Image (cartoon, rainbow, N blue to C red; front, side):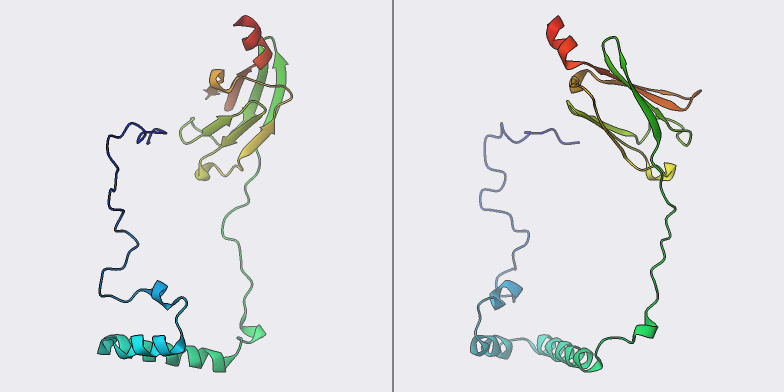
Length: 177
């Protein structure tokens, strides 16, 4: 993972002359060069193309003309799309007030460990994403009161197959400071 702001202390520019990625090497054709070109300019550009480029342009023109003459495919030829992924369900959860804040308990019988589980907490929302293999939809819970995101703790119980998230109340943390 790359830390946020890792280039802020750099002593020199990362690419002083700019990056060469995304640029066409000099002497080669650039699709961006077509923007704003007149037909005359385009014909001159095509006249200067190498023979293999001219052959490719002819092939492309023939393909485009052929597809324009065919029209849309017949309606009978269309087949309905079939979903191949199983339907994912949202996990069951409870949220309750405890002495020092809130407690979120998520039932995840499909889960073996916390590996691949992503927990993100803001002052008023908790989001939990699960590994794709588990087959659970991501969970987003609006919190009934403000919490301190940096003091959140999560624990997975293999015995009960539950994730317990302790969310300290923002007012309790401010009052104790």
